[in-house]
Image (tube, rainbow, N blue to C red; front, side, top):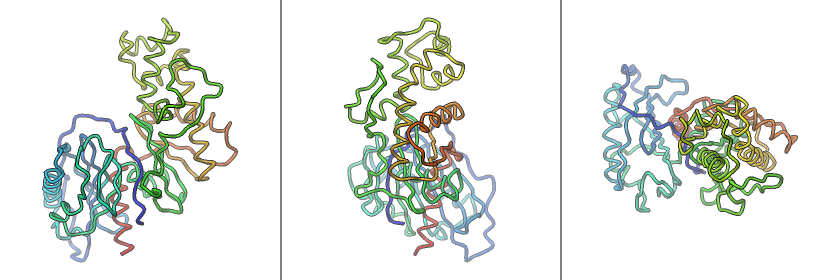
Length: 358
């Protein structure tokens, strides 16, 4: 599998994080075992998983705060110091690790090793593979975090047994990843799946507080958690407002503190303002998914990210009901199952597959 890229998954819950060590060591009785590591690198936290190359083997995890630095050489020294410690604490010699999969919050192609569009890592556009090779001589698989999350759901999560699936992440931004015929697909320049740039039109939707459909990235601006938050705040400052809305109390009386999660909670309770605010984001999302279904005919669309996770039943039910108006093709729309573990699980699955294909 050598088509390796997609979009950034900007939807993790950024809770305070302390390093967590494995509770015990793996049994290293089989000297012929090869070990693999999957790493999900986020702007604030990094998750590592360690396991035997054999499918179904026990998996150990370690979570640590990310060392965010503008110098990639400093970052990789830190990262591999942590990898070495993880292996040592688990009773594994790092020399027995055959491969490491890494997911980054940005665009990166494995065959060029240059990280782009990664706000958390303002690195110069240079090949990071020699920096990695200075610390590790095994196989490396580099990809972005949304693709890795999709691989995780494909390997052990909601998309198991589906060879044609799309993962859509709805959080701070919008991202997606495509798995077609059982392989990640990234397009010519690694930009396949940039659904935040969709153009879905605004027929029949008239909100004075919406982002213009002619704005670059209007789909993301209207459907992401950030977009819904902005819709809600503009509704009360520039739109009709509603003095009796539940949103006032959910935001402790401060309209500037309304967030997308408040809107969904109020909408589920039948709040008229929240329902009106969500009209456009839900309609646009349904149209976007309908376009995906029409073009790719996936058997399943897995929806992850902070927006879906905040109220999955309400959100997906509303999206499904609208989607049914636009397509007659049978496609399941389900919530992601692996949460913040998906990226590291996918990184491990990706490097395992890479080693099997050697």
